[in-house]
Figure 1 (cartoon, rainbow, N blue to C red):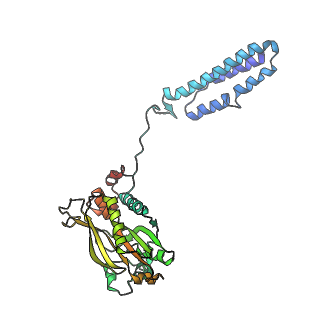
Figure 2: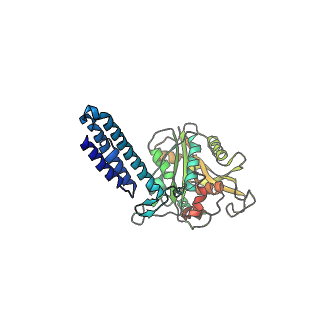
Figure 3: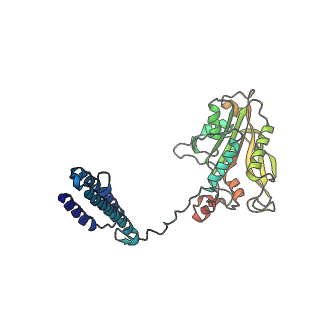
Length: 343
């Protein structure tokens, strides 16, 4: 009994003299004295060696020692907060932490996701392809043979070491890759970045983003194309938007058309985005040319289809009231922060 009392007094002196300067030291104290293999638990186990007539008194002393140790542990925890001392620096742990800035998605990404989600409700799946493309997939298979004058419609970036390779001018190359798989019917969307050697201005850039769509099956008509695009425009811009189709020419579709919507920037009164016309072209479309189907080993006498393609930046400019396409690629944080709520 005397040995036990002597040991407890020694422990009390050690505990009393214990001081901490960081949270790790507090945790070390808890483990050493109050842990499952700590000293308090070990010394409580010595009750079995105490004579029967002394057990009551020994139990009282051991409980007091346990309470003493637990009280010291709580005091050590409070010391860090009360004295605001952590590793020698004065820090008020009661103050709230610095707020972490909330990030946002890029407006082009927001628009891409919106476009894809609308067409996915119509059963379109998503396909992707390489940005560096060979001449066949980018031009030849799309009814644009070598020296075809329509190639001049797109100012192309050619790979200097091999002129057969280009930075793709449209995501139509992904359409060819999907048709070559021979899995019909096809109802696919092809989003991605494309490149054209154009002068950078408020309305155009040397790289931009597209979403193209392709639907091939038996008995597909131009009426199917129009209804699909009407649904898209109403879902994207609202039921009050005005729409018009204009005849156009694309080598890979016949007949071909361009689709305009009323300008949201100026309300139709005229601005630099709509070239003072009140209308903004948002996409080109048409029925897939029979030659394109044949190039991909699809029987044009059995299957028909339609295709459409749109830039993502221009719909984003209409949707968010942006009047300069260059803002999308300047990485100005002040510009990008405006889309935090839209994420």
